[in-house]
Amino acid sequence: SQKIEQNSEALNIQEGKTATLTCNYTNYSPAYLQWYRQDPGRGPVFLLLIRENEKEKRKERLKVTFDTTLKQSLFHITASQPADSATYLCAPTDSWGKLQFGAGTQVVVTP
Amino acid sequence: NAGVTQTPKFQVLKTGQSMTLQCAQDMNHNSMYWYRQDPGMGLRLIYYSASEGTTDKGEVPNGYNVSRLNKREFSLRLESAAPSQTSVYFCASRDPGQPQHFGDGTRLSIL
Image 1 (tube, one colour):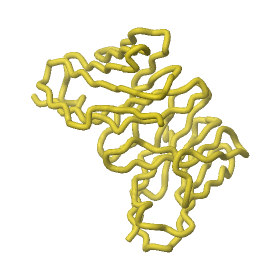
Image 2 (tube, one colour):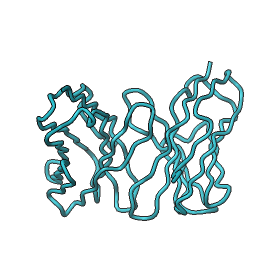
Image 3 (cartoon, chains in turn purple, red):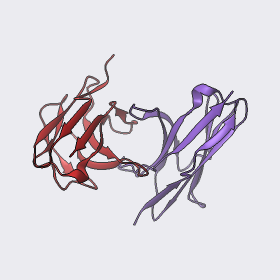
Image 4 (cartoon, one colour):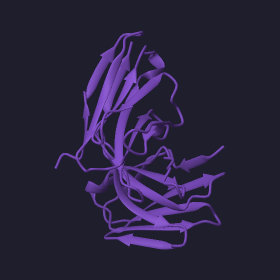
């Protein structure tokens, strides 16, 4: 069965450092992969999408990589700020637009 | 700029009671979705509606029914609530090829 793995342990990081989150998937060949941010008590909010033929995508301080050979995506937050504290969800998506969500990784940025 | 609106935000039910969760979107999206989110697990798809007039089962449809009332509204009904249905329920909408937009959820407890 399809499986999506994200670090279940919270990532504690100091302000200004780079946070790196991992998303691994098995038994799945996504056409693209999405990353969402979720704040406590709120719904997920879309951040970035990377397609299978793209190696890297950037948006402001965010960078996503996608390695279809390793079946892995890395999500980087550079120059992290306390406002970046949230849970980040990865969602591999098939060519029909059907996505599956990982359980998410909580990021805590301390001043 | 409401986006996706879910009502109610909180609800407590007794086992066996029924209720309907409401979802409305004002972005003229064709597709709408219902998910549940449980601790330590990713969002799981309950039902979806690819377009007005159609509905399909997702990963965990048992115990639920849906109605796509019109293009804007997609409701989720629990006919006979069970404690295992205690969860946070999210509604989402999107257009083809675009990311999903989520509401802020309904927190449902079943005693």
